[in-house]
Length: 101
Image (cartoon, rainbow, N blue to C red; front, top):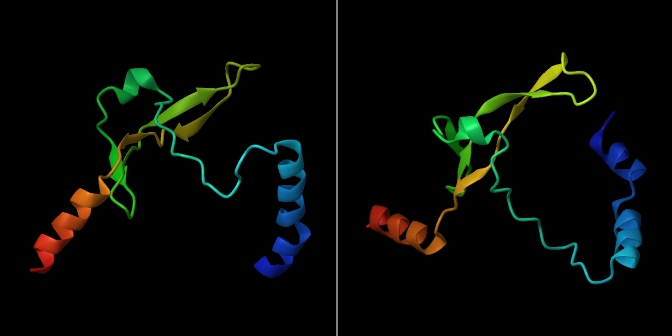
């Protein structure tokens, strides 16, 4: 199955129009900000496991077990993915300029 056919079955523009009608004051073109709240605050305090994206933002990569509310014996692995330190764009550009020259 190719991606073009999969994209046609989900009509994003139609869904966006319906949501725009239901929530007229919300701007759907602006992406949501990254989540800054740690999902496992007891374990994320040390912040031993970190990763960064292409822009240089630092995220928490701690993996924890999430139990099901209905059945306490079932669980699954989740990753925190909370934003720890956003990159300052101007400072990043200054560092890049120093590296170039």
